[in-house]
Amino acid sequence: MRRLASLVLPLSASRRCGPDTVVRRLAVLVAVLLLGGCAAAAPSSSPARPPEVLTLGDSVAAGSACGCSPFPALYARAQHATDVNLARSGATAADVRAAVPAERSQVASAAEVVIMIGANDMAAVFGHPAQYATVAAGVDDDVTATVTAIEQLHRVPVILLGYWNVVQDGQVGAAQYGADGVRDAARATALVNQALRDAATRTGATFVPTEPAFHGDDGSHDPTGLLAPDGDHPNAAGQAAIAALLPPL
Image 1: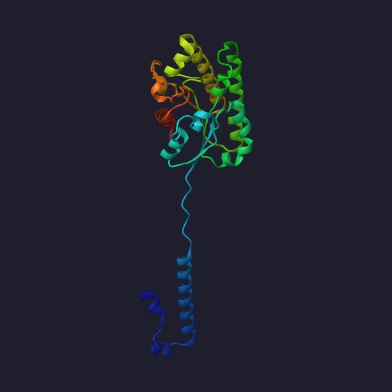
Image 2: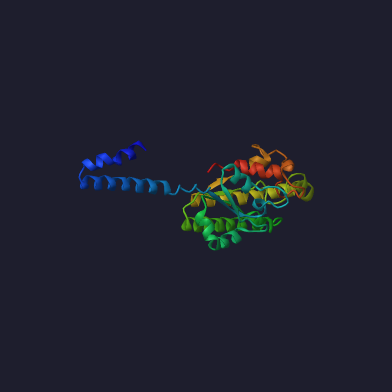
């Protein structure tokens, strides 16, 4: 106010100054007032939107048989991100590959893409070991094509999650398959995981194994406590264990 007041001449001073001086001082005053009004009316910057984490995959990522928040939601919450979970029960690697073009807008806005797929491909032929290698090669091809398609739409980090088992595990699996079947399941799972590792190496994606979280570092841990009653899907503790494996954004 002191600065503005100094620009307004008292009446006696205005009588001593010429008309040009008065006009110039009034012009300065008007300019200051206008600039001050513009500065006050300037809109504040909008808050930054949280990053989006897009998840593609099967019933594990969808949270089936859990009755809890699945790992994509837990992970996004920990990263202060928005969870965009497009995982579907029963999905195969070919299903996810086919879905990418239809989800181009979601891919384009994602800060990270997490993919967990391949178990249903192998489960469909479980018990027929002669078909395992062919199925694993198909998973490798489909996942490689999926990641490549994502990168063509949007250069974004992609995480490929492995499996602790592609079929039932823990006490349920042991009762269902017996010792030979448990060994067969381990072989089938290893082939899917190797296909996912190969796809990650080929495309520059990051492969994150889940087996140590469920079976321990030496592979001897009973995962029953991390599984739902069906022995196939993670329970709340299992979903939290997967979320904890994902690297920070």
